[in-house]
Length: 336
Image (cartoon, rainbow, N blue to C red):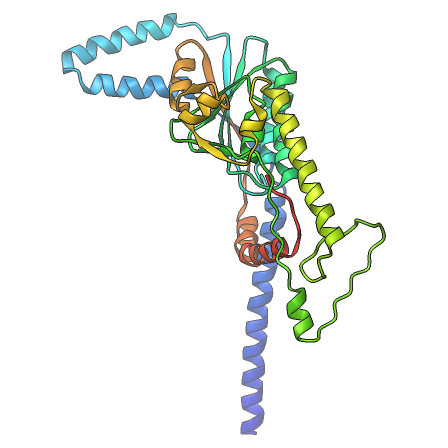
């Protein structure tokens, strides 16, 4: 009888635990369903007004109470007389990782501004990227070309780094400015492929890979790297480099291509001498100058995450990151 009672207690506790777990799962499912209905949003901010307000705050804080009162009256009268600025400078930010992950939101921002921009408007992109995957940065650069095709003047500002795929994007601009110690250039292609074939042989492990097409797989992490496969892979790298150089020279035809397309990078002042950029300026200086006569509008497209999506993201991020890093190490990818 005592045994039966203990079993029933254990069974009841197990049911309670299972019910709690089921309730948590159902709650997460509901939150995820709700969050999936949330729409992405385009956020706008007037940077010229923000700059004016900041300057006003400092200016008033330095005045005596009497002078501050007079100044406030003047500002009120000025605000009533002020007319809306007719030309706009649209500001976009692109902070690139190896996959140029921001390109999805970047394309949305560009699509939005192209719907409303007029020939009197221009675009400033604050760019920061050390480069990454060839196809990803090729798409990101193509998004900037949409601005050029719309006959809008494009300025790219580099405060820290625009190297390799980052410079692929930057070179599309009508004007490139960079901070004195910003890193610019690195017009080259790289691929790293670890090979474990000899380790498998040593441990008497067979690895076979079946393909259709002579060059479907040139080199791999587990298979034997043949002279023919390696030669083809190196040729593919050269072909990618040629495409990179062709794209750069089409957008900046005055560059001395043999001199700058060596894979080297330079600091801002050196890049100016080589013609990779047009001016030594920070993005703050460029925006301050634009704000004197134009409405400076920062655009940011982002998806609003609900609680369910945040929970899913937290739970899956670590596992996904580890999986992707492992996958990248197993694949022979070319990088800008």
